[in-house]
Length: 268
Image (cartoon, rainbow, N blue to C red; front, side, top):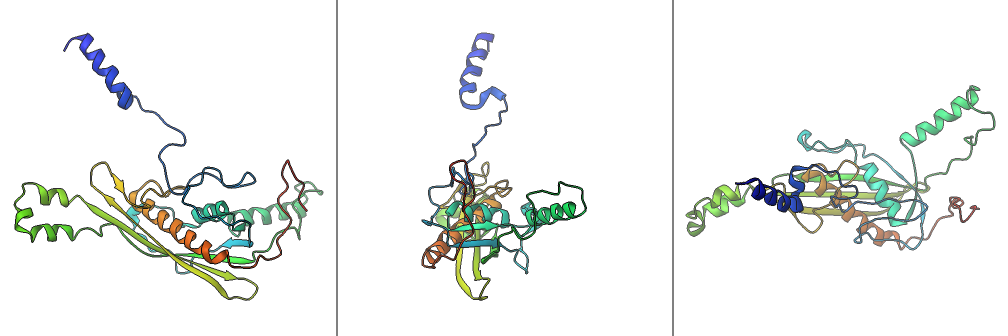
């Protein structure tokens, strides 16, 4: 191949794959759980996300006391709570309060103030925290990374398909990844469980570059988009939250703390 032909091939390849160039594309990759939440609202949230017209209560996310049964080779974060916090805030159904690392930092700042290390007029002071009116507990019911392994036996039992060269070997690469989760909502004032929902998702890994196809198979975010198993579990929680919102919409709103001050309003 001449230099001119090689240059032409490289130019064509560049259009499709950057001709060997590695790029980092911000915001690309796609996921069911995406975007941000805050004073500007749900920015970049998936269109499938179910919303509330207004928040009904303050909400804390609690770790499941039984933990989360996930295989080590999933390489997932130990907890799905950060992921669900984003979904809950994006939906607009709750004002989310922190009962984890953020709370520990608040307590630390108060201790530093009392020790005279930070300013005496620090805005971090006792009695300013907001109570969690509701608590949401997530649970991973089951997760299967190879729910489709029975396909090989089915193919082998059908003579016409069994005799097709390479078909069984190809089917062996197909893996159906499934997950089912649950969300439990409790009123902290009465201890009553107000609502519960389950969510599920399935994706098909064709064994070719991890190609996924499924109704919610693209879910991910906050460390849950690195593996196909993580994407399915994240999508299942997304599904469960959408179903929970249907129940939450029927609840009468509690007396909420003042709105968060923004450039356009001062709260109160």
